[in-house]
Length: 379
Ligand code: MRU
Image (tube, rainbow, N blue to C red; front, side, top):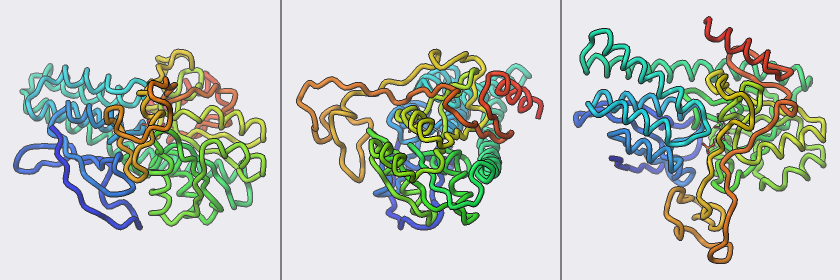
């Protein structure tokens, strides 16, 4: 069950409501989300008292973005365990809520393994619940640390590739504090550049059809006092042609073993543009986003979203994602079919570098990625 309570907030300064938190009010434990479908108009908390509510929040994109999906998945398993629901059922439903971001399944498995481990070690249901929660909390903390490390490595890479500062960075979708236990992935690097006085402009793709760029990245950029400009996705070409982009920084939902990168649809065209215009195309993601079990880009399952997200415009300030068809303003003739993949895949040869908390991979090769994964397992 999900419940909502709203508070209107000013949009300046750091976000006051974290993207996700565990809470234990007298009525029992809950997972509290900042409902991202309501941003930037209002900061509304969505309180999930069971795993099905969290599954629904994941499907409707109230909670979204690869690292945060992992944290949400882990807390969802913990919620089921602590409240005494069927943990295996909950884990299956959570892991299957969205297919592309590998972090979701990774987070679910981690909490599930802690739960099972406690039970098989002779612990009771209560101890197993506590173990699942501890695993979720650890993942949450680790993601915050990884985010800070990615920002350090990413900033160093920008310094190396673009000496002299004054960076004009183009980003797509949303990859900041709204997707992370910390300040995010690609956005965290742009924020680090801003704090170092090296960011001249953040170009923010609006990111059709659900406007994660316009609603969420612009919101985060404004709150952080960054110089940013919003553009329609199809204006990126002319921006490159005008020589206004020094680097592209994006996150990732899954990185295959060969270095293919799945990210929000529209990322691949940016990679092609970047190559044509000799601009670095940089992917920033935690090691948990690298999936050694997915051999290549063709093996990545790309989520297909409902056509009405394309054939209808939703309310400008509060896009009603997840509502039934008919909830928005139609922009196409009735019955129009839409092609609406949520992600696309960029081949490794178009990726200049992958920045992780463990360091930078460049050039992007299967061997270098495998070595990175091995190194991170040893830590
Ligand atoms: O459909 P979304 O909003 O969950 O898509 C999110 C993205 O594509 C992000 O760019 C990606 O998760 C990387 S953010 C760290």
